[in-house]
Image (cartoon, rainbow, N blue to C red):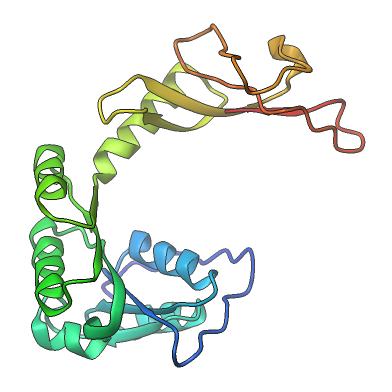
Length: 223
């Protein structure tokens, strides 16, 4: 039988950092692309050992090992026994990133019961519930994939040069778009970040100080 977990190709920008035996543990719960990509980003940092906790799957295990992390296979990733095997007692952070909101919350609460100092990063689809959890659970960040995706889709729909969008600085604040443009074409050549707001399309664009790579014709980044 083939793998039940879709494994996307890993595009590595740098080799994973080598973890030392005494490095603090970061646990990622999940078996999809978000969990794998997050583990890869954490592996690129020095000073951490990354453990990915998810169901048994040979293809997923190979993908996890390829990025420099350790896969702990468990029938129930949100169980005390599985978290113990992943090293929850000494872990500094748990990132519960599966598509199952209930599993994520259960794993996070069990981890906090076992290790009151552990930091929690939680994936939740329900924005209202996410806000309530974050308000009542100390040292916890709850992120909604739907919320962040919606902002980026909206920003890209308004401005074709946008590659990322978010509501900022509040959760329901103005839509802010991040885009790459030529500074001179936007009338901000030579401008700096301070006090500069692009007036068009209701997206907040601020110009970084100009950088002129050789042969670029004075390209600048607007974000």
